[in-house]
Length: 58
Length: 217
Picture 1 (cartoon, chains in turn orange, brown):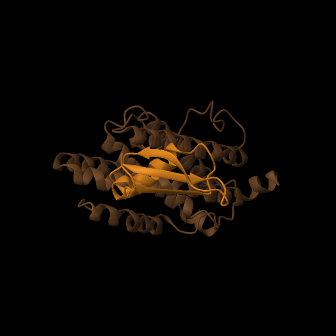
Picture 2 (tube, rainbow over the protein chains, first blue to last red; picture 1 turned 45 degrees about the vertical axis):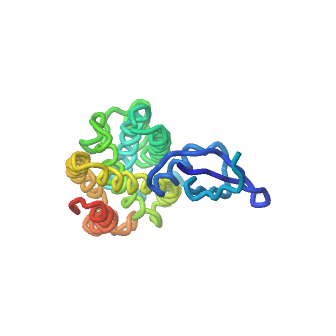
Picture 3 (cartoon, rainbow over the protein chains, first blue to last red; picture 1 turned 90 degrees about the vertical axis):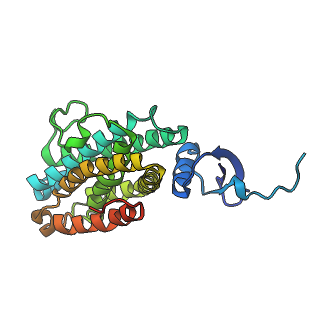
């Protein structure tokens, strides 16, 4: 599972768009670009959820 | 300007090249679209829809060039055209997802290689469209690479099926490159002939095939 973030302007923060499932990093990039294509982004990043460091759990 | 373009460039070889790229892209888009609801995952279905839209859009951007070169007629209008020039593998629905991936890896890439050779074309309208199309093709290549690796590693059965699909698509992809005839190289419409493009094509796809444990072309 990958978490996808993007921003529309460089002076805006990245914000969370959603998630996607892919077991290959290249496919994750393709899926992120084709699923979350509602705007002309200036930056899009994604990272595997498994690498997330939990800071708080309830 | 249109008259000058027609006079200087309206040679049968260029008309054939533009028709071949436009028609093959149109039919590749149609074949991709058929998998929008049949792909193995929701994400892959969205990617198939997006790539179908890209390919059909590329074709639509090329048909006006065909009209400039060959004149307006029923056969140069995309809506009324019936005599399409596309490779055999695009004439009917892909039978499996491995056929989709093989066409993505080989037929889509052959069209990309052909358009790369036209980026600085002396026929500037073709060069302009080629540069624009190639920007969108980067994602198609990533999709092909990713799925080739994934299917080849998934199971021996899938690897065998992918290998068979690749063998079938290989012939078609080489046929696409035949449009880069010597006449067009001399006129600087494209910067490399069929043989050079064939080598470039193999240099691009063979590392992916080898890395996936598949036989190179």
